[in-house]
Image (tube, rainbow, N blue to C red; front, top):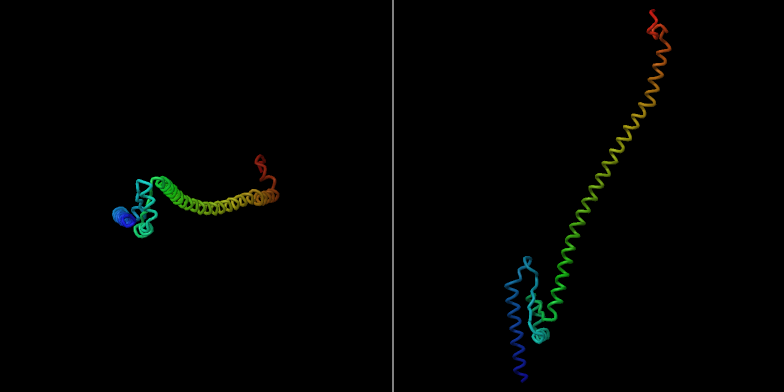
Length: 161
């Protein structure tokens, strides 16, 4: 009987809507939960009828409920698992990127400090080299001049004069 079949379809759609509304009100509390829920239908015929029903779009858009059957449930759960893992990897990669940016900034500071210390060390080495070569030679030549200009008697401690 077509009339009874149409009434049964309408009743089934109303039942699906009421279940989706109930699920949405009880279990969907974003951000504490996912922004969607799954309405599992335990037989393929129930699932097929629900997918073909005009209420399917309303259930999905108004109540944020996805209808799943026995064959689609495993695939749906696997795709959700992959999605959540991808989200976790994405969050971790953002954290890692931030850490690497911090390391890069610290490395630049380290490089700048190292350059400053290198310049100071080079300046100190140049100062020591200047003392070792130029100043030592000048002091030596001044001492030689002083020795040459002094009388020999003052230079020889054994000489009693």
